[in-house]
Length: 271
Image 1 (cartoon, rainbow, N blue to C red):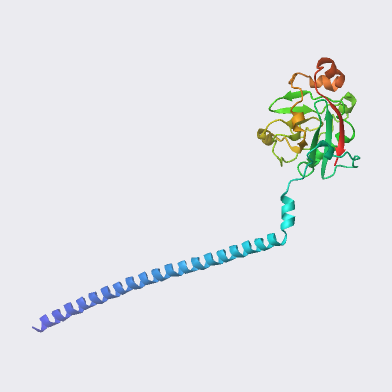
Image 2 (image 1 turned 90 degrees about the vertical axis):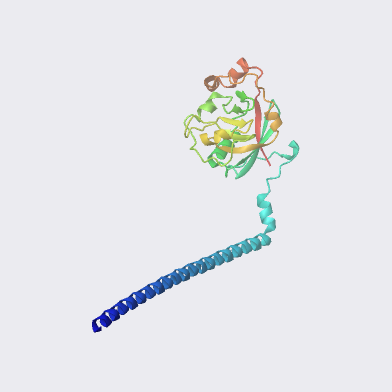
């Protein structure tokens, strides 16, 4: 009897121990779940705080931008406006040549197809603009021909009437520059034969030739008056004139073999 009581008591103790462990385990699970939930809540609160800070900073920046724009509306408007251009040729008054190329300058071409005006910017192409200004000022283009005319693509010129003038630039290549403006219709660009080979030959785009941008053709100016005259340049001979012959004989060769070709008569600087 006594032995049975001891056995029964042992069983009760074991059962009580199991129940206690189970209860403790359940409490542990509950505590870990609560901790995980608390951690997730804390994470969300931190994210919300960071988002609020970002939104506040964004609003502050926007407000500062609005205040700046309100303080200088006239200046911003002037900076975004294109350069005003005269509507008639008389509006481009002839002026004496500057000593060096201004940051922005205009030159008028008088040609057998009619006049046109080119505006150039050193911000587009510093070396290209300066070389073009030099060529115009020294009369390099006077009496020279438009020796390559491809309708819808380009009209090319830039080999002097006097072969000696062309020869002066044989080894005076310009370094390549970044293409800052696309070769759209009316843009004027130096021709190249590869890297760092720009000298005196140029072309005016007849169409939007954006494919030339990735090839390193860098516009330095654009026709701002008389593009209709540029488009009237005689395309009769296409690409027939031989450039090596022009370099040897100049305009004499062109006038002898291509009598209907159009020519530049004079170039002058204008306001």
